[in-house]
Image (cartoon, helix red, strand yellow):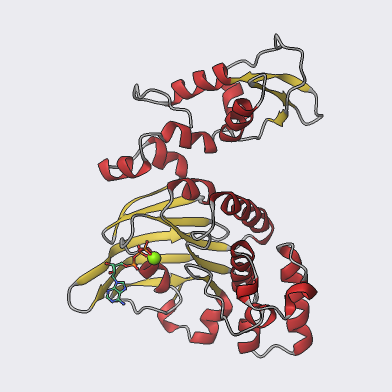
Length: 329
Ligand SMILES: Nc1ncnc2c1ncn2[C@@H]1O[C@H](COP(=O)(O)OP(=O)(O)OP(=O)(O)O)[C@@H](O)[C@H]1O
Ligand SMILES: [Mg+2]
């Protein structure tokens, strides 16, 4: 749906911010642009909606060069969430959310309905916040408003530039989860900028890892973690990639290679988890619980066995190709 063909961006005479990047974002997919500060992520994003010109190459949107689309078409087709929410401080929450519908000249009733619908999507009371200003909201609430503002005209594609970057880790995880569950329904095509490998693994169907304007690797999170294309990728991904890779492994993966325990020595009741729980979450439950174990249940909620730290550890060792010591957070 969004196709970069050999795209280059040079600022001034000699600052090559983006260097011959080619990549495709398919419909309904989240691609995370990942890399250190200054590697060209924001520039790559802003060339899609015409906020930066393209020096060389082209970007196609549904097969059409974005350079042939006018500003109104771009607004309608592509929502944009900028680094640190970018709400207009002098506009009310309602005005902020409906700014694109306003520019597209929707009538008042339609704008109002859309405002209420979007607020309920992120669990905020439409009436309570209607006349408030951005500074009267918490950071997490402001970020939610930034996201629904980009969704307002229901564009098929979204550009999100570190949308959750300014939030503390707990709120951040909550908003990431919330956004993923919204995305499961909306199925937008999304380019998402991050410099955090954990966020990229969690949010991305694919990750485009950048360095100095060049694309180092474009692949699924699982392949980036397990088959880094070069030294830069493996360094960026980090030493504790076994732990990180647990976010993309699930109880059913483990069950394929390792048998669950059929009982525990302690008779205390343990937390239950389903087969589609990520092993990263399971590790959290196990380390928190007194018994250091969880019960795994099938779809009928019947216990099919128990998983403890020893089993997770065995699985992690089987994952790590090198003999890095297994690290626990
Ligand atoms: N308007 C501009 N004029 C000149 N150089 C620019 C301009 N915008 C960005 N650059 C340069 O282009 C390069 C890429 O910048 P960009 O903002 O795309 O990086 P980024 O990956 O988004 O970084 P960050 O993670 O810090 O947001 C940097 O070297 C930056 O200094
Ligand atoms: Mg940036």
